[in-house]
Length: 65
Figure 1 (cartoon, helix red, strand yellow):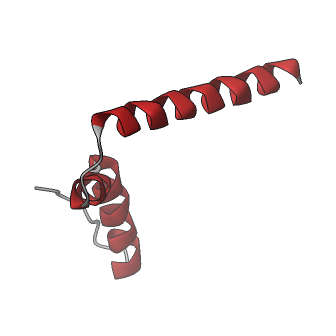
Figure 2 (cartoon, one colour; figure 1 turned 180 degrees about the horizontal axis):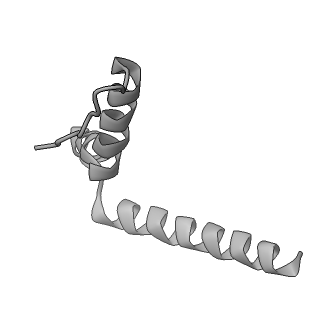
């Protein structure tokens, strides 16, 4: 369960923004989307390797600058 501490002078928009941020950090939506359709394990591992290679490439570009 997510708890959001709201101060007396905080607006509803600010409290909602805090809630959304905490909810996004839990990763519930990401998990629901991944479970909505089955993917073969080989496809999942392939996507992970592609993401890892992309991140490595981006890190190497940042260090060159």
